[in-house]
Image 1 (tube, helix red, strand yellow):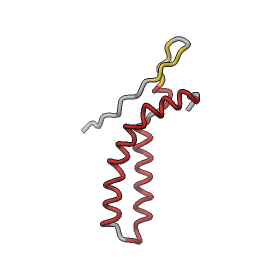
Image 2 (cartoon, helix red, strand yellow; image 1 turned 180 degrees about the vertical axis):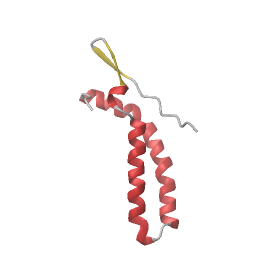
Image 3 (tube, rainbow, N blue to C red; image 1 turned 90 degrees about the vertical axis):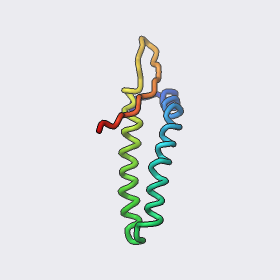
Length: 88
């Protein structure tokens, strides 16, 4: 997405803990359901759909790299994006 290697590493470090926590919140219940309630023949399709769902969630959480960069003069300051809020 147009970030240099140092920018990419900084962005990854800044977002790792939050994304890892959300990953646990997503995958622990998915695995409980899968192991306890999904019949054997539907396990692969179920996990395929869940993986697709997680990919969408992770992509939305991470956001677009250029929106994460705040350019000030010649220097780029890396700032974490606020998480999207759910409007109900």
